[in-house]
Length: 368
View 1 (cartoon, rainbow, N blue to C red):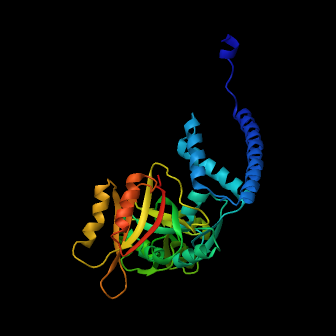
View 2: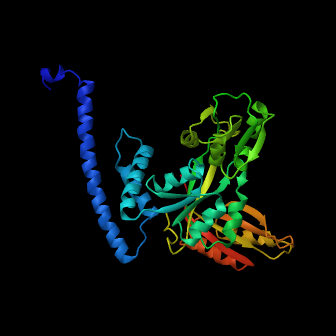
View 3: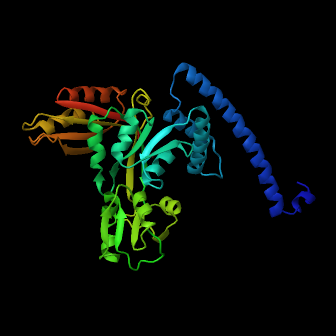
């Protein structure tokens, strides 16, 4: 290398910004080229009647891009960028209607954006009953509902709704949930009511007991709904997300007050089978089902035998009353694996023969 090159002065901030502006222009040109190809793909899918949204295809593209990534961008950020690119391109092919718990600012909304990207057309529902109904009726092509929390366990209403709904699960999102105390005033003084979804109130009960022992804890349909109500009442506060604080213009009086620092909620992505069939095996899949057995000694034990004999791991087992008045129960089970795997298929076949009621809720890739 020449002495002149060695002595070359580093680029100034202004020069670097010029470089970035030029690169941005190149990126925009390439993104629009990609979008035009995506529009052609959409036309072919429309003629063939094939699904526009394929989560397995999204996962394949992101994995391929991450494998090719040599830095300095981190893989997780590369994945986020490409998910948004694919979401924007998909919106040109056919915007995806996704039902979520509203209003804007819920963790359910956040889970939907993580799965579909921000270009999805979100339909806000008052409760999970409406999310299931909108998805089953075709008002929305997909829905996102809470399934399980790492602190408070299963979300019982969702399990009950799965029992008789025609929808199935095609994906999941595991979301780190941080509850913040939101209010008009940037102060903990004179708070009379704390509003949130019942699960959020339970997840923050220790903090609330210590810092706001005299405040009423009032359950509402969603955390974002609590934030919306807190806007109009100076002595009310809400437990909700950063997104809700920005959405409703509230102060974050206290950050991340959930009792468990690693509090997570599992959200299920649902749709009708005719909208999207069971995803192909990804190598790390979960199969969810609900079953019931006749009330006899050893019946529940017998359910586990096919799993043990075929080497299938059970990752969740929950019971819910059948509401028949006969002390009967439905059992919700998550299994590790995909029905295309012979040992899983054999276990399911044997399990089904033991059940009075048997329904596969869905098979889907496990969320990272």
